[in-house]
Amino acid sequence: MRVLVTGGAGYLGSHTLLELLGQGHEALVVDDFRNASPVALERVRALSNGGAFGVERLDIRDAPRLVEAARAFRPEAAIHFAGLKSVGESGARALDYWDVNVGGTVALLRALEEAGCGLVIFSSSATVYGEPAEPRPFREDDPVRPANVYGRTKAAAEAVLRDWAAAAPGRAALLLRYFNPVGAHASGRIGEDPRGVPENLMPFLAQVATGRRAALRIWGSDYPTPDGTGVRDYIHVEDLAEAHVAALARARHLAGAGGGAEAFNLGTGKGTSVLEMLRAFEAVVGRPLPHEMAPRRSGDVAEMRADCSRAAADLGWRARRDLRAMVESLWRWQSANPDGYGTDG
Ligand code: NAD
Ligand code: WQD
Image 1 (tube, rainbow, N blue to C red):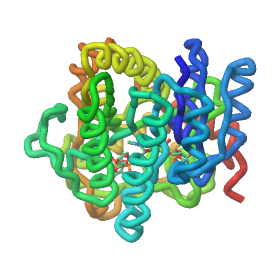
Image 2: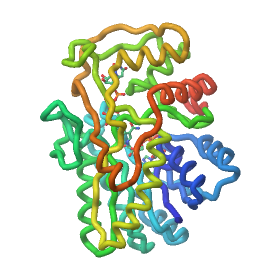
Image 3: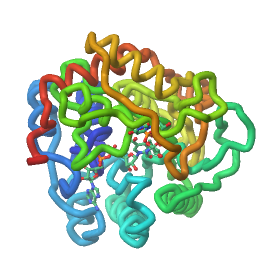
Image 4: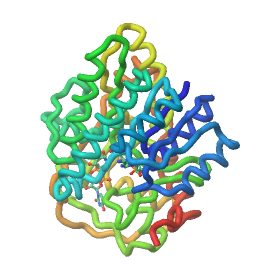
């Protein structure tokens, strides 16, 4: 298929782009590189042996240029990664988050209408669920009640996509709710390259291991979890990339059956605590990593896990890679590229 990939130079986008090319799809990356490096795409090009993709450097809210790019490419589907993703900064930059994450989604859908494209795969987040009501994995029909600005913009973009899909027959929107994507491509050539001090556990831990950060601070050791630290459902970025290719087939099927919107959790269903992750990382690097206990981070919950049975049934997809593969791939990437793509100065 011809697939327009917004945010295709970013962490999840670059891995998915590589997977799409490997499966014989054609792609057009639309990215303004505000949080990505062109080097990532050069490496995807090399890893895919000169893969079939074009690149448009533009802000998805630049409607005339987006329409022009979409009309020229004539996508059959779009995968929409472009967005702002930091829970921590979203409160202070609320309008930027609404503008890019929701306004950008509206702009994309208008451009797709102009180009006659009716299939969209959207990067949503487990954050849309907010605090769990019961200690069990989240299901897609659990209530959506996000507890921060970022999560509210993702929930609103989901609503926009549902309304867009319902507005005309044959449109399909797949809302993929990622849990905690981590790791890197097995080659170690592409990976996550956060700007500034990483907010998330895995990139922070990787920078402690290279000596760029002094010590990991474990945010909370008094949670009602087996070892007191927070439990999350980490998913290997390559598994996540494969899920997007499966989602394209599902979107086509859904559109053929009249269309509509469907949400899918993407995780492994397994929980890993911060301490377990630290130990797994230490086992891979072969030495202890400095860390200290610290108070809980505001807004964090004790445990989040995905019930992935809908994805297994309807996408025919399940995560295949284990924790060790997540940590090993991250370490391969981080040790070979201690400054990421070299854009951080
Ligand atoms: P990322 O920042 O690495 O990738 C986002 C890409 O979008 C970047 O390349 C950035 O330059 C581009 N972009 C941002 N705003 C743009 C705009 N207005 N116009 C054009 N391009 C723009 O982030 P990621 O981790 O790859 O996440 C991709 C998507 O998945 C995001 O929508 C994010 O909210 C969502 N998500 C991420 C995670 C995670 O933990 N990484 C979890 C759940 C959901
Ligand atoms: C994981 C665990 C922390 C950093 C966030 C977003 C979510 C999604 C994924 C976008 C928690 C602990 C972390 C550190 C720590 N992103 N931790 N020390 O908060 O589960 O999810 O990223 O959609 O929406 O909310 O991920 O990696 O920040 O934290 O102890 O320096 O690691 O308390 O238990 P989180 P995370």
